[in-house]
Length: 322
Image (cartoon, rainbow, N blue to C red; front, side, top):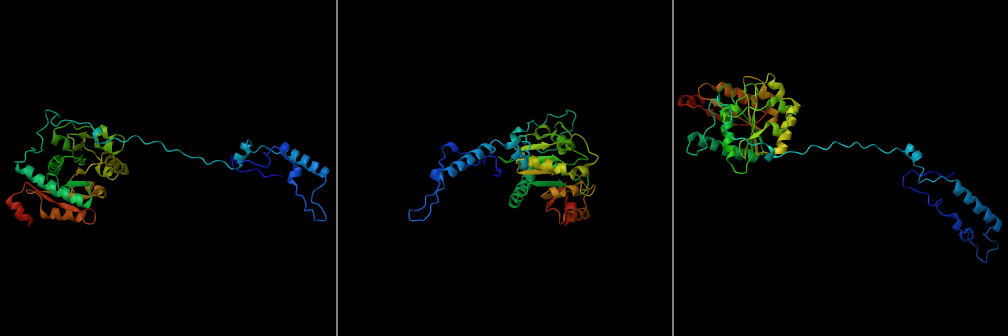
């Protein structure tokens, strides 16, 4: 009995031949004339063999159409198709808003004027240049700005540094309000606070529905109200996935995170693995050297310390840090 082929497109060429055109006499071998006997069978035997082959060809199944049984023996593998990802949005898809459109009752913005003759603006431009050089040399993108305790001026530093960075033509900077317990970036820019940062970080809100651009080079991630579980949000894998997606879509040169005080909560410690470097802001009127040493100890072996910015410096406070 002939074996059935396994492949779907495989066909038995022997049984597919038209036996009515097959000449058995031509297929038999004649013996050489000098041999004492002949290999040619008798005519009657040849006819019988021909009829048997015809009967077998009629009884043989047509393997080309006998697919159900063949498939049952070797089922085709099931290929699971992945859902097509949603199209990624880019930098220009983030809505633009003009500064100063916030609540009329809000206090004056804490950002500095952009004029180069302002001493504070020049100081932030110098900080910007050094920061850009260091981050470019090391390939750093995610920079955290924090202070030892509350009121040191980390939001003031983060907002003005971001503005200074935005004056570099062709650059892209994102400022994220990650002081989830006490958000202040929206107030600093005198802008509507927008939605909840916690909702955005959970992955349920798209970039263009939460982020705002205040210029062609600066985007903001604002926060509407404080979060009770800030440390848990900062170390949530959904938060890390959202930030990774945001960076992939927007391709910023730098992402500045305005963080809560290092020594007050564990929020900053929980978020350190997501940062490339940290800038610590000290207050000349309240920060003591022991606080800075403790911040340095917490960062040691975790994230590089970019430097310490002395805010509200006085001659007496400068002597204290020497």
